[in-house]
Length: 70
Image 1 (cartoon, rainbow, N blue to C red):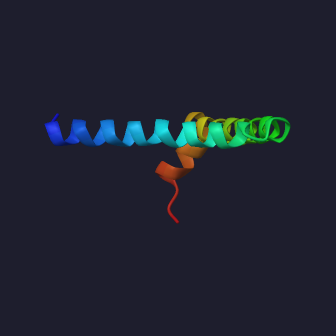
Image 2 (cartoon, one colour):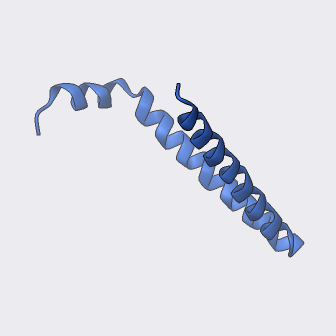
């Protein structure tokens, strides 16, 4: 792996961590409402993860994507 690729991955990872920190800090500023925002964001993240996981592991979907012409 090239050094510029590693540097780019580190910058993107660091930016993602910084963005998550900003979201967390902004959500916790008005404490009771911030906790609700974190719960909603967590639920949306969980739903996104489940949809992507089901799409990846569903054998029927893979069969139709590979074998059926559009």
